[in-house]
Image (tube, rainbow, N blue to C red):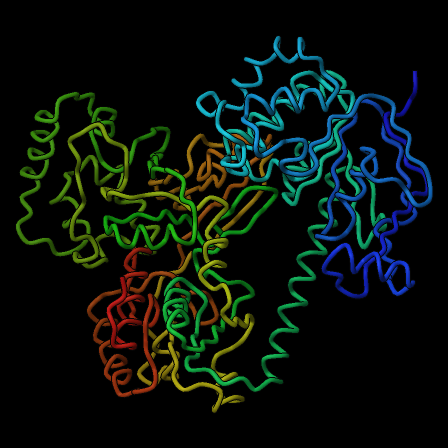
Length: 638
């Protein structure tokens, strides 16, 4: 028995690229006879050497045009090497091009038999496995429909179901599964895992580095037709991803330099690539205005920025769950992202006790052992009455007058004191205007009609919002304005309003957050995305386990590790990112003085959380940005 399933030795693939366009066969024949056809030699693969053992799984990574598909076609026998040899020991089931082996004019039923025969199966074999193929592809109701009417995902389902009806010796998969829906991709991964355990050799191409890392033992990095690196999949994927990030940083730097040299004139300079700035830029660009978005950070997205860490979308600046009851805003964000159905259901830990949030019947049942809403309402009313608080003098008295002593002591006091860095007796009462109590068994934190998180993270959504808009990162507004005062007509400013005016009246106060993020070698660290720690003795306010924000991704690509972040609330100091404004009487009065200065700036629009010195939910940020853009354009935006 042969040791290797595939042996590739010194393979070179050469294509001839025409130097001129020939529109028809007659013209081609005439030029060929007259020796007028000119070609340019293109080397697609060169010096490729690989030995792949039976039962191994290999991934192939590289940018578009690096030779990945060409190599798989050569191994599959579709292309012949110009130089070198390819030896294949075993039967190959290739899934290389979407629709390959499928006749679009035929029905799905007819194509199942056609595709099976192309793969060498008899009609009797296909009849025996027909129901299995139909069940796996989930195309029962479309069996007698022409395939030309199918979506790309449906074609992929059909092709994969036929190709894998039996375990081939070698399965070749080249990006075709990228078009399938999440559930189908998960089923494909499960079937491929079973094939691997049964001895099938897998050759797998994907731009999803994490799927290569999770599915493959080894990987090959191709670059301009040559092997750049070969080895364990994790090592190759890490090296490839690192170079891609470096190339991205280089392109961003080159773009900044090019924009500076071009001296391009803009209608609006938008300071801040967060949600407000991105939406404002999108709406103005749609209507013919030229915008430049700058940000001092190295990334777009502001505080909703998410980063891929080992295949998990990490909320770098704390948990962000989009929620709204505004149907127009929900439709708006769904233009730029596909949202999952994540429901925010945080938990709270007090010493060795675990409670549901928000305060609801599950919370009260655990707290007092009561089951009926009337009993709970009576208990809370009794505790409030015993306190005899008529005019709350501070936050502690305000909270006690709203929820009673038990809820306050276990679930409010310690958490609030950590958030604000001081005793509740020293905090003003207005900070807590209400503490919602729900007398139903409902752990959904929000009451809004719509809720979710963008699949693949918020950064992808922000990239779509800023598509075809000039963006310069790691760029300080005040330096840029000084160096290029004539490059823009107006400014949209989303930074700190007091900083814009050089802190002439003094600093506004903020609270900020410090994050400790780490990888833990546990598949499920805490069983929930967000758990608050309400005991003051625990130094952090909450722990986030990021993989739980996208449970569908974890189902598709399960990981035996997790990424967690501990949050520590801190006093803000200059030089640290500000998070929450301290909207007490002193700071609000100071803000009003800055706002009066802002109103005198006729060529500056102030917007967003920091420029407005107020906390915004994400939907309200988008509403404000759309409204301000409409006001600027003197139109109404749907």
